[in-house]
Image (cartoon, each protein chain N blue to C red):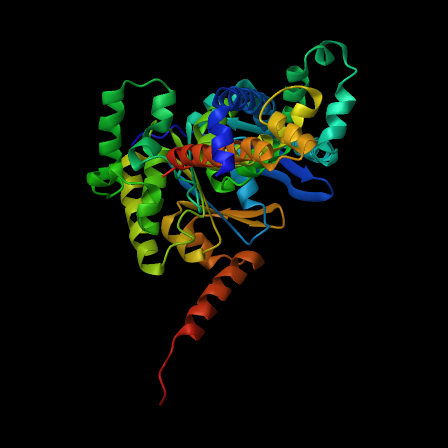
Length: 258
Length: 210
């Protein structure tokens, strides 16, 4: 698959974000290449969610510039920018008064697609995310957590955006379902080659899904590494992560009473 | 059953006053919705305005009914006709429950739903009409229901300034020390209150999301 390596899909140039008294992000420089899955890894409060929200301008930077497709943010109409970027959050945020089909078809509908094309698209997306097409007439409260999250992904993909932002999308799922949707995400990504920015605090998830991992701490980008590099890294923060997760696994194993 | 006989004998007037009463309550409730719902939406979105607006509506609510009718009497256009004045006073009283419930209803919409909507690129108006209002509608209507029921009771006082309505019977009965006359006003008023409660309640259930 041809990847335009010259222009990064998303680019942060010296971006800072401050809210009264708190420096949430400082001096962020980061590039996301087309078709890659960049994972933002960090603790709560490290600034990873803010970084994500800067991309679809749910948050505006205090200073610095963000470019999408080489074009500075200011040159975009914010509504059009957002419609071209899929957004998936942990709480999913499905519209409770809409059916699954209407949830998925909302952006195509306000973009003025004809009704039959929307219907076809909805069926196509349900299959893509591994859901029965019969679910389309259900309401969100009639779905399981895993199904809701899949609908959330389908909704984000509806208008075929090039960029997908995912904020701990699988964080609230039970381990088995999480494993399932992670596997589905990988196969989906092999078919679609979206540019994905994925926020998580789970190292396993980061290593499994990311083509690169951007480690954040206290509003700063610590380092950007491939999963293989990350495991071998001598960076104190990266190795702290590896230790924490490694030790955690070791200790959590119940060896039974002897 | 003196009361029933009295009502039957004066049924034309009972019906007439009931219609007048309904007119006062209906017009004022609709006006209060037309003002209160947009105001409630505004303060739900512009957080700084919520305290002053709710405080204002609260203060109005604390003015005794008769006093408010009296205050408004000297105003030129209003004072000319008692029903205008009564409608304005009833509208002012109906504002608080409507503003407050609209505010609460919209603020009560799950923030993740709003965030997802914004992130998907819905405009503020699309978010309001497709998401916030449909999800808040039953809370808003329960405010309208409270306002309508309060208005039915309050509108009986409008007779004191000559605006008509079922209060006429009540005041006349009080002056004549005749319970039959009082009840000829009070019973239809109570029935109207129940009707308003039931009617808006029905609408509320019909429009409830899901």
